Every structure is written in structure tokens, then in C-alpha cells.
Length: 143
Image (cartoon, rainbow, N blue to C red; front, side, top):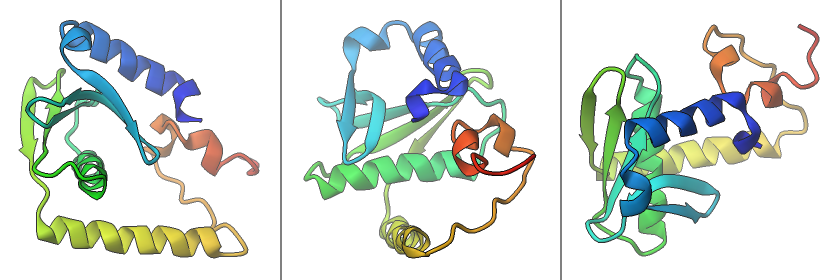
């Protein structure tokens, strides 16, 4: 579903224009429901590019999850680079034991949500309308 979003298309355009040489150098990797746009298999580096002009803890958590999934599939020692072209900032992200435990806890919470008979009510936030999953959360709601 995410691949059809205008926001995802915009992000892809930023990937192609901000770092045009990467398409040749790095590979796209799809694994266990995630899609890593730029993975350097030789050096085990995941590059995650954000179009936002604000740094968000959710961006870091997304990258940590990518590193976690790599580990779950036998790729150990990978690092992440979180990049904000509009801010000209980069952050190296490493998966720690604390991060692994946090991700496991979040996975349990997600599974509990999935197993509920009723969906929880949507949380209306100003960031929601810029999310590529907006239509999913609000599909049956009258706005």
C-alpha cells in the first residue's frame, strides 16, 4: 500500500535527485516486510534518507528496526546512516541490546493491537495528514 502514496513517490524522487550515484552503487533490499532503499552489502550499511526538515525519533526507530530485521535474517554488524538532505545532516545509528528489547516490546504491542476485535480509534495529529498510511488509518472515518 505504501508504494502508491504521493508522499512515498516524493521521497523516492528525493532519493534519486539528492544521491543520484547511489542507485548504481547500492542495492534495494526487501526482507520480511521491509524495503531498504539503499543497502551497501559490502560494508553492511543501511542508508535511510528522509525528506523532512525535522529530525524525528520515529526516523531513528525505523532505521533501528531495519537493522534488527537484518540481524534476524543472519546479517550481523550492520550499521545505519540516517540522512536529511534538506538539513545537510547525517547520523550514524547502531543497534544496541536496549534497542533490541524495545523493538521486541513494540512487536508484542503491535500483535496485541492486531488481535483485538475492534480497531482502536484513530489518534488525530497534525502529522497524520503527511503520513503515507493516512488513508489506512482513516479509511472508514467521516472527517
